[in-house]
Amino acid sequence: MDALLTPRAPLLLRNRNILLIWAGQALSQGGTRMYQIALAWWIVTTGGGGKEVGLFMVASALPALLFVKLIGKVVDRRPSRSVLIACDLAAFLITAAVAAAFHAGRLGLAGACAMGFLLALAQAFFDPALNKAVASAAAPEDLEAAVAFQSSTQSLASFAGAMAGALLIDRVGIFGVIVLNALSFLVSAGANALLDLPAAAAAGAEEGDGFSVWAALRETPWIKKVLLGFGCVNFFLTPILVVLPLYVKISLRGSASLLGALEVAIWLGILAGTFGSDRLPARGGVKGVLGLGAACMLALGLCLLLPGLIVNRALFLAALFGAGCALGVNNVKFVTLFQERVRPELKGRFFALMQALLSFTFPAAFFLFGLLAELLAPPQVCLVQALGVLALAAYFLSLSKSTEAAP
Image (cartoon, rainbow, N blue to C red; front, side, top):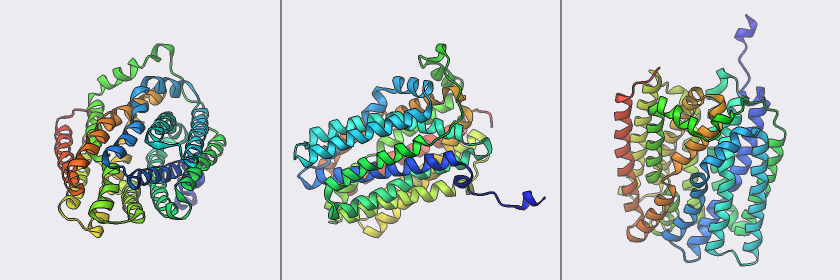
């Protein structure tokens, strides 16, 4: 009876592997966010515009699409720990090379894009390996909490990274920020080296070509529709990374510190939504999650609509926080659903495929919205984003009403 009355310790304190995964991911992704905000600000302040920032983002979006089949095979056939360490060490070497080129004055936009491509390639292997590691490290009853911590890691890292990056640009310069990012990858590699994960089910030879994942999606067509829907949402949502620096410089006439504050608002919102998701139960199984997803898309579209109509710093901060909350809830609910429905031996390839389907619109989105930002004022670009997301909220609502799936 006493054991039943004793509250359980937080997941991070009673599961060493989840703690190490969480800490390593927070450090490496926090450093990466510092790097991205520094490079975006460097491009904008050295004469670049939406097109140049868009090209930089395109380079970071391509690897997950181009190498999805290879990524899935490697992640399923190799232990998660070894993949995570190799990705961290590769990212350290790439970022160190960026720092050296920048210090020598030889980086340039082409160099930044090329190195961004390589860094994104390492990340494209890292993310599905991380999802696989979380699934093997958490007990079934802790799975949603583990997914929440994993999702919160990116929010926390982006919050700290955006804030630190904006502040450190003025104090240690862009070169210093890049060096700190490189060091963060080394620390992350050390944390992942301490992982002690149970052996995962290995992919069979007959499943090595990836067609079994597509077969699984044919058996559950709602998954494919959801992934394609979120890929389209990302087409309108992700270019906020292109729009924000321009909105700050042109519409708000602000500094790098304001840019950092706006990014912090997004990631604080995601953090709040992540840990508040358990307060929004999605009743009705798959249909319930899809209905909740439609509501979150509606909230997200409205939050993007406001700064398109009214240019105001406080309003923009509040709208970005609200958008982050909606994203945080969606992330936890859908990733938990996928973790529960996908067979363990297919998780590596499924999450690599998920990563590719979610990001298949990134290159076109970054490029087209970069060009659009050259033609329209930043608030008008926000309106285009909002209308697109609102249309997709209607798609998810329709999907929640038509999907026939087991609860």
